[in-house]
Structures are given as structure tokens and as C-alpha cells.
Length: 340
Ligand code: 13P
Image 1 (cartoon, protein in one colour):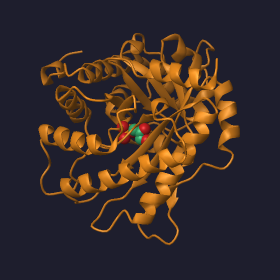
Image 2: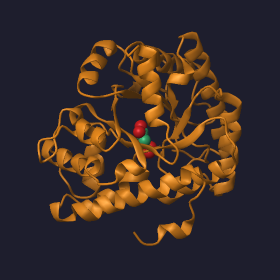
Image 3: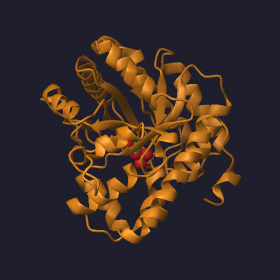
């Protein structure tokens, strides 16, 4: 198949009505933090057991079209010896890979950060493709205050995201472009909206400059919400309205799908917000999810590292996936939270 044909087929497999993406690509330090909270040691075997549980959940493919894996997981196998990317593919779930190498402080810009990982990316992608990955993810983060992020941080991260996306497309791998405006801090919702608009505007300018084909990528943005420590929190309708206002201003209709991150929202909040946005349609793009914590928190709570809890943990994953699938079609209601 030609490279554009491959990219198109992967986008089509990912952007499916009533389905979204499971982000299970926590880096070493992040998964260690999540495991610590449930009293589990982060050993290679525990990570393998946990991620096998996720990928092996029967019926997951009904609501999940893609899964983002961490490099280590691409090479791991389920108990019966099946490579985890293959197990995902058997469920109709496209395997993907986090390719950024994490963030560091941006030089000469106190408080700002920049994401690493461009060096040798094309070569790494070659290996990931052989292990079954068909799409990739790169996360840029923006700290928010009255003065942050700086213009420099907005421009530097847009440049890196665009370089990453271009390299992926040249290799036939669909890039998920993830600019995350962080929820940490006491900033207002208006400040979050202002920053998100500036960030997305710059990202799409850079993508254009770097010749990225918008039809062959997905956007993974944060929602417009007040900072976690802000004095008032926003109602679902406000989050939905403000987020869509910013997206409509900045994201071209050629982008096939927008898959939100959950960024510290509770599982129920993340589902309700997505649902509310889909009720405000018709929209130019398919609006879905690419949640990490909002899908996995209840799973980890149920699992707690015990093989005896696997079934219960898988039921928790299937439930959140199903409710988010409903939210993709604007068919979720809080009453659905009760029961399995
Ligand atoms: P959260 O949904 O937990 O924010 O994770 C999504 C993700 O992939 C962050 O890079």
C-alpha cells in the first residue's frame, strides 16, 4: 500500500463512531507513581501483568479503536505468549506508541518546558512499525500562570510537534499531536481559553509550515477548564461551550478527529464533558477521547496488583470504555454510572 493509503487506512480505523483511544503509555516514572498509589511495586512483570489485563479485556474493541503503548509494552507478551500489540489487533484495536522522550525545562525560559525525542525518531519508528505500531503520540505541555507559557515556549513546542508529525507521516505512521495546557494552578477558565487558543493557533501554523497532511493526523487537546486551585470550578455546559468555541476558532475542518486527554479530571467529569460537547453538534470533526487516568483509575483501584481481581478490573475498564463510547455519540447520562 502507498504511504498515503496506509495513513488513510489507519485514520479510518481510529476514527470510528462511538469509539475512542485508550492511553496506556505511562513512562517508567509515571507508572511507578500510579502503582505506588495502589500499593504495587513497579517491576517489569507487574507492568506486563497490568497491561495484559487492559489489552486482554474481552469486548474492549466495541468501544476502543486504538491503544497507545509505551516502548516496553510493545515487546511484552500476554500469559499465553501472544505479543500485546497482536492481542490488541485481534480485538480490532490499533496499536500505537508514545514516541516523545519526556519534557525538560526550556532553556532561558523559567517555568516553561519543552519535549524531547526528535533525534533518531525516523529510525525508532522503523522498529516500532515492525513491532506492530501504526500510530504515534507526542505530548507537549504548557504550564499556565499570568505570564506562562511564554511566546518562546508556544513557538518551540509547536515546532517540535510539527517536526514529529512530519517525520511520522513520512514513515507511514499517523501522528497524534498532543498539546496539553495543564490544569495545575489557580488560573481562571478565561486564562485557560486564552492560552489554549494561542497554543492551537501556533500548532496549526507550524503543522502547515512543515507540510503535515491534516487529514492524516489526530489532535489530542486538553479541554478548557479553570485551574485545579481556582476558587470556582466550571459547570459541564461551560466547559463544553468554551472548549468548542476555542476549537472552532483554531482547528481546521480537515482534521478528522479530536481525541481529548483527561488531564486530571475525574472519570465521570471527563465523560460528561465529552458527552455535552457531542450534544452541541453537528461538529466539523469526530469528537472522542484518548483518556489515560479517566479510563484507568477505576481499573487500578479494582486490580491492586492481585491476579484474583483481574476480572473485576476488566469489568471496570469495559464500563468506562462503554460510557465514553456513549459520550462520543452524545448518549451518556449520569444514571449510567450506576451498576456494571
Ligand atoms: P490523561 O487522560 O491521564 O491526561 O492521559 C492522557 C495522556 O496520554 C497524557 O499524555
